[in-house]
Image 1: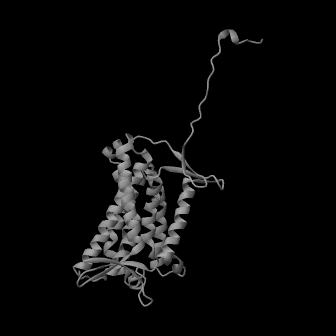
Image 2: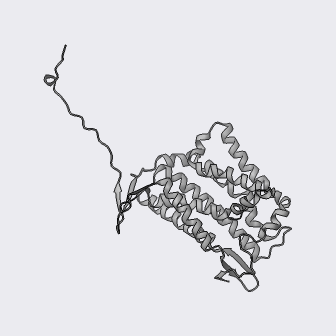
Length: 300
């Protein structure tokens, strides 16, 4: 078994498009996976029914994304006139999910709440930093759109999306770094939700990918082509994985652990011409001067 880098030939399909048209035509045959989605949606509705919507707040970005993904999936698979636009998001969905996890992990690992470029006098908030990362990852996707990794054995070849594998590994490394930071200096309470959600998502995504690879290696026979697997995960699994994190984070034991976490002081990164300086956030202090009774005059 060996792993090699390969650039797509002109005659080869893009790896993220492989099997897409067939999946659209045979979507009904994949409905056997629907109960998983319905179960997770049921857990989500249960939180709302019990008026526990506060439990969803730490996962706001994934919460909003879930609705976006569902709408995109419905439009794309229904072959709506505007599906040509949503298809672009659909076929890159795995990359988007991995990138979403990367954004959260990045800002936690580097503990940066603000970015200040001294030379240009540009100040960037945490949200703006994520926007810049989105642009960077879009550019990366465009540059590596035809790149793939080929895992081959004596009688089997498995094509893997190069950039997906790359970000997948980076996310795992970032999770390890955050875990080390937690052991050494603690972790902010809000960041614990990001850590747990990232671990849950990456663990399940890794399991799904490994299952697909094993099915290829074993030449698993099924009514559906193995190229459908990535689209099945996109439609029935990936949009709802964060709901599992909601329940895990709100177990009594986990909540106790989260509440006991040490808070970190937020920092601002100052970027001059050639140096990066970490500047602790200043805390305003109120100075109270004491006056003696004799110094206070009452004017009638």
